[in-house]
Length: 142
Image (cartoon, rainbow, N blue to C red; front, side):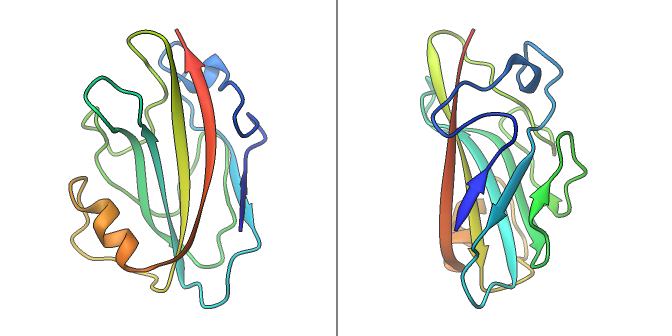
């Protein structure tokens, strides 16, 4: 499975437009080569370098099995969960200092619907149904 973005390369810098210093627009993401048996997708964007540990920037589940892209700025064809900012949407990189990594992870799931998903149990619920996952990492410094 492959996850790419037209807006930044894997391991590359995330442009300011997609951060708190810009418009906080969600980047374009697309995926291919999904495994057999996929009935849905989920997506997370997590900053593992945050001072408080993993900081959640974006959580999406119930992305349909026929969806292969999230357009720049949306719409998001799935259900969003509150992020670390308390919003049900994408909130871009906003590190207090230094360079942080932002890990976008796409999960191919064996189900099209997850129930009772919240920020605290998102990864647990998603991983119970993950067939395969793939990461795309961007970096940002303020």
